[in-house]
Image (cartoon, rainbow, N blue to C red; front, top):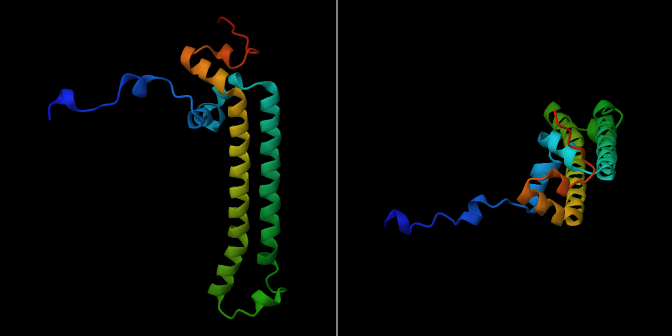
Amino acid sequence: MEERDQYQGDYSRKYYPKDDITSYAKYLHLMNAKPRYLAAVRKEDLEKMRILIIWNATINIATLLVSLLPVIFYKRLPWIRNFQSKFSRVLWSAAFVFIPSWLTSVYIDASLMDFIQRRYSLRVSSFSAYKQSGDILKINDEVRIVDS
């Protein structure tokens, strides 16, 4: 097959700016995009995101503290105390810590993605215009551009 006959994808597929929810989350809402995130997000969205992050940190700490209680006081719990081998006690203690931590991380990821999806549904047209033009004022008109 000649090189001209191989399909490489057309220009719009390769080079047209992507404005789907995945690129929105990568571009604005992940922590590695801090400068763009702070410039492109409106103040009320930033405040809601801050409240969500504080709430998620509180849930993480509370879950860790509650899940460590059976590990610390395993001699007072009759169900764990009856295990004879140390391996089974260690395994159940690890389960008491890791299962609730995993469940809260699933909840936190779901709440964060729900927040991002709601923000995306509200800002999809402005985000598309921003990606096509490159003008940050399209996504957030509160940004002041200062010459250095």
